[in-house]
Every structure is written in structure tokens, then in C-alpha cells.
Amino acid sequence: MHTASARSLGHFLRAYRARLEPSDVGLPTGGGKRRVTGLRREEVAVLAGVSADYYMRLEQGRETNPSPQVVGALGRALRLNADARTHLFRLAGLSPVTHAGSLRNQVHPDLLRLLDAFPNAAAYVLGPAFDILATNVIADALLAPFDGERNMPRILFTHPRARDVFPDRQLITGATVSALRMNAARFSDVTEIDELVQDLLEASTEFRALWNDQGVGALARACKIFVHPEAGRIELTYESFDVRAAPGQELLVGSAQPGSRSAQALAYLASMAAA
Image (cartoon, rainbow, N blue to C red; front, side):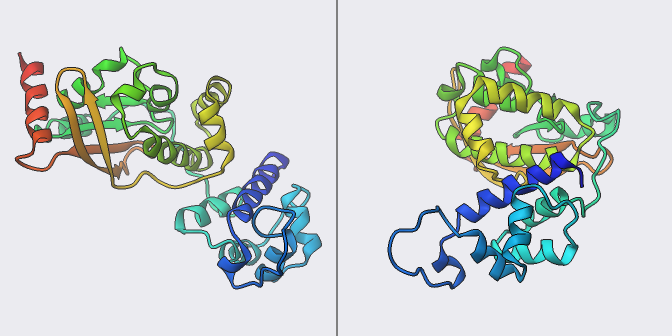
């Protein structure tokens, strides 16, 4: 593990240590005011079965060769979920890095045809940096208010209409940043992710706060609300699917409850696109 990765590992450990209180892990609080937020280093070391000095070196980026046993113990001590544990192993250099490859932004023709198999849903393909690589007609209509911007994080954090279109934007932004962090570790060959992160760190204080929070997790099933300037309020349930033939690409499909006002709005968008 090189120095930059060791520093990233230390940042991650500190952030997740700060999220836990002694009572969360069965330790006594000791009474009185604690000088640090969350667990102390010594408490994490006890829970993981390592020395306090060794754990301190990990957080400071001075220990660059932790064993799988130690990393697994740290994941248990910090009560990490499956996505966060996987990310921890990647940061420690103990999990293979997936390469997105030079064709990461080219959508396979079979996948393009699949988009049209969802005539009543919004379907689109995202690349590793969450660039929108392809859309069906409904997804294209939903994204029309963003004036051709084709990167979801840039839309959410920098586009002036994002707050109007996404009334539950705070839920979406947190999940998006967590998934972007996971992709940054999974696909180290995708320089577009690093460039995007650096741009947004400078452009958005909100992004900077979420990124520094060290949250990590894959895109999951989620409900999203759009307020479209022509079709009005639309509530969709999104599912995401990894594209095995193209590592780093994801297919997202947003569907409405059959017979609902949101389903009627999608039908209206589809008819407008056809016209």
C-alpha cells in the first residue's frame, strides 16, 4: 500500500471511529465529558485486538502493510456494513482493483436496445464517474431541465435547477457521494472520477462536507421525487443493475406505481417525446 492509500485508510478509520459511542460497542462511557467525538483510538485498538500504538500508526498513515486479519478485526470493531468493509479492504490494498478499461464510456448495442424495453419507465446507463451515457425517451425528458449536463453529481451539486427538480435532494446527494467514493476505490484507472471529485470539492461546500464524511455504499433501491416543469411531481422507485460486460457501468430503471398520477406523468412525457 503506497503513502496516499495509507492516508486514505487513516481518514476512513478516523471518520468511522467518530461515528460510534462507547455504548454502541458495549464499552462503559466512564462518565464525564469526553474530549473526542466517538470512540478513542485506544478503545478501537482494544476492540480490534491490536496495540494502541499500532492502531495510531494506521490512522496516521505510517503503517502501510496491515494483514487481512487486522483489517477484518477493524471492520468488526467499527461495526462496518458490507459495502464499508469491502471499501476498507480496498483501501488497505487487500482487495483486487477492478479496471473499467478503455471502453468504459461506450454502451454495448444490446444494452442500448434494452433501454427501449422499458417504455413506461425512466431508464439510463451511468459510467464509473456517473456520466449519463445513454437514456430512453422518458429518462431524456426527465433530465431535460438540466440543459444537456450529462454528469449526475455535477447536476446535483452545481446546476441551478437541481433544488427545484429534486425536492428530496439531500437524500439523493448523500447516496450519490457514497457510491462515487466506492467507485473511486474500485476503479483506480478511471481518472475522470478524481477530476470530478477535485472539481466538486472546489465548487461545492455541500459536496466537500459529504466527501469528508467518508460515507461509502453502492447505489441501492431508492425512491426519488422529480418536479418536472411540464409534467409536475413524479415519484419513482429506482433499481440499479451492474453491467457485467462493462465494469463500471450501471443500468438504472425508475418506475412509477401502476395507475398512479406519476405513471400518468411518465406516459405524458413519452407522448411528448414521440410527438
